[in-house]
Image (tube, rainbow, N blue to C red; front, side, top):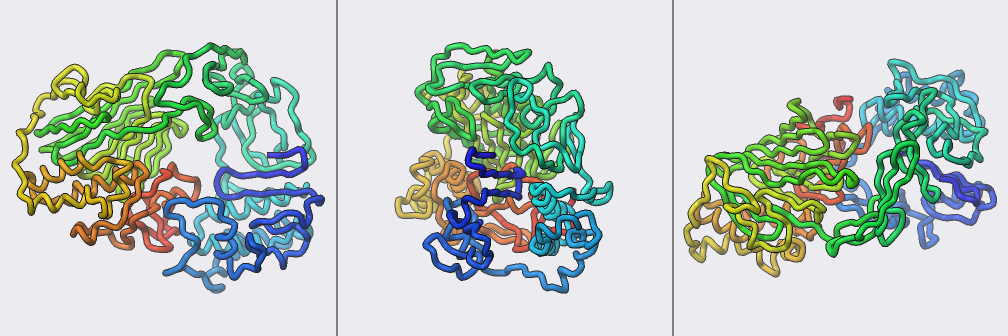
Length: 581
């Protein structure tokens, strides 16, 4: 991003951000980046103008928002690398390349001191036990800084060291153009004020042009509307109040048509950078354990036996809407969830009981990115979360319960979860709105009545002073209370699965959950090298996250988090050095 005042901001979409200021801003700025007055010794200043005690104090003072599960700094069990441990990564196979006097970056040493970059590289390499992705990112940061100053660096990547990987129709260049050929550039004049410098990266092959994050031939380029570029086939609302919808068709032709606007359940606003009719609220369909479930509209039903249940079916939308069909099915055996199957965007994802996943019949470990990011699967706390872009989110604990969250759909849904029309009375499992019970599925007889002593074991769910009180506004507890009493009084006597199901639904809906396991006698046993946390951020602390940001949820969920210094590899907690590719 470049402003008309000469400020340039770059970001590699993952871990490296850079701000370049003209000298006119010297001494006139503040923040984590300092005051730009040429003196590095007075940059350690907090928001209120005082000298910071340490890095955590400095960072905390400039914090602009909270992220669930994100702590100010390491407070206990912190992993520290000694100089002797870092020494192992000073060779050319790791970080030593940065400071090598006759190395590929020697021409840059007099302009940009490689010392701080070398220190950062050694720190990361030591913590991640030499994992090559962390080393490559650290060296790449120095290369970007050198090239931004117009300094030529020599080739440093090889087939065995930091080998570049580019998408189809792209190739790697050490010194590629700062303003590469783009579809938008072909459609009109392009501001290229920084043409004197180059940068390394993946660039389009000859005859191809950049279109979003793809390279396409000229006939497949998109459209430009009011200065913004839209790839071919993309549909969008050009401006509020979302009463006109446009589609970019062949040969860069823009076709716009009037629309009725957003429904009463939606609002015309920008979310995730996209202007559109976004839902004001979402609704949940919940599998509550022991065969009980609650529809989107709140009807409580149950099925027994062993069978496959169609929870949700969304048919393909009109061609101009570009909406893909989505189905969610569940297999149960004696009222226990055995498998959840999701079909969306041309892929079939199977979540088996336990931690196994299949995509189109092939076994996988988490996390997963599918169909260009339109389907993402991740471990969140002790649950598995599948997200379909613009569609449902499915949270599954691998055992007993499923939470299916859906924004108000433009297509009327079908299936056991109901029709999402706000009326629970027409969510009839034996009628046409939901579909007849499948073969081998039975509707169990009403459960036995609960004694006062048994009912008290579930009463904590609705206690206005209890640990779930902060959940009541996000998820009404009635359905979970009924399911819990049915479980306690007629199906084994254990309230813990029902309590855990409500805790998951609460956190998925953004409710405030307090510590509840100790008082209710429902401990969660964690595997070796991990510990229980009420707000675990397991998704971020994964082996996959070393190389690229995983598809994590904004919410945090209770579960087992790997001990300090370990990462989740999709099945267990391991040392970073044993992570795969």
